Image (cartoon, rainbow, N blue to C red):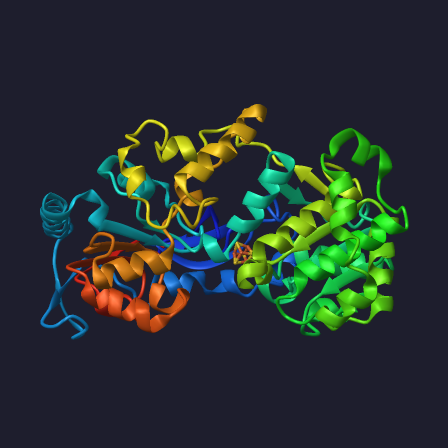
Length: 462
Ligand code: SF4
C-alpha cells in the first residue's frame, strides 16, 4: 500500500466550505480532518459539525452513481442502461435541439438547489440557449431578504455577531443549533455566556431560545406585526438613533405615522406575545448598541408576510443605527474576482427571451423588469447582483406549464444537484409535471425520487 498523502480540500456539504485535510492512499480518500489553518480556523468549532466526517463514505459509497444512465422501459420503471458520456451528451443535445425547433428555446427549463455546487455554468447555458426558465429555491431561501435589504440600503447586509463587539443579538426565526452548527452557533453560545442580551423570536422553544435572555414565542406568520410593534416603541420612547435617522434615512415621518397604531397591546393580541415582553425586547435591542439582527429561512417561508417582515427588520436595523457598524452588520462588497453575473453572461446575452418570463406581471420584484429597477440602485455603488438567481422562474408556474402547456409548453427539464420532488412544495404537482416531460435529465450523486423519473441520469462529482 502506498503511503498516505495529505491533500488540502474543502467540505462542500454546506455553503461554508470549511477547510479539510484529506488523507489519500492509492487515489482513495481514506480520512478527512479539519484544517486548523483555514476557515473556521478552529478544530473545536468544526468538530461540532457531523457532516464532514461522512465524506470518505460518500465518495466511495456502493450506491453512488458512477456512469451515465439511460432509462429503459416506462418512466419510473427503475430500469437503466449504462451508456458512455459521449452517447449521453449527444443524445441529450439532439433531443434538446429537436424540442427547441418545435417549441422555442423557452421549452427547456433547469432546476437547482442550494449553492453547494456551482450553478453559474447552467445559467450561462440558459442565457446562451435563450430560455428564462431556471427554477431555483430562492423564493423560499434568501431572495426576499436580499431583495428587501438591497431596496432599503442600496445593497445587501451581512450580519455580524462578534461576541466582543456586539452588545445585543436578536435572532428572528433562526435556530443555528440545528441549521448552522458551526462557527455561528459557537459565537451565539459564547455571546449568551457573556450575559449580554440575547433575544430569540421563535414559535418553538428551540435550543437558541433556551439560551436567550428573552424568548418571544410568536404566533407563526405574525412577524411583521411584531416588527412594527418594536418600531412603535423605539420611536415612542425616543430610543432610535437620531443622528443616523437624520443623516441617512428617508421617510421617517411616514414611518412614525405608519407605526403609530401598533401599540404593545394591539401587537400582543395578534402575535400572542405579552405586551411587557414586546416593550422589553424593543428596549433591549435599541438600548444596547451595536446590536445584530439575524433572520432565518423560517421568515423566507411564511408566505405573504415574508416581504413585510424583512421590511420591518431592515427598518429596525436602520432606525437603531445598526447598519454598517462593527458588531451589528456591514454592507457587503462585490467579490474582487469575477462576479456571478459575469460568469453567467447575463448582460452579454440577448434580452429577447426575457419577455417569455412566466408571471412577470405578478412577481415584479423577481422579474427582469424588477431586476433592472433594482440595478439602478445597486449601480450607484458600482455593484450588481447575480441576474439569473434573482430573476428565476416561479416554480409553481413552471411546473404548471409542464402539465398544461400554458402560456407555452415546457417540455424539457435539466435538474442539477437537487431533488425537486422532495424540496419543492406541492409534491403532487411536481410529480405530475415531471411525468409530463418529453425529456428529464438529472445530474446527481445518488438515486433520488427525482432520478427515478429521469430519462438520463448524469453522475456528478459532488
Ligand atoms: S459547517 Fe460542516 S457541513 Fe458545512 S462546510 Fe463546514 S464542515 Fe462542511
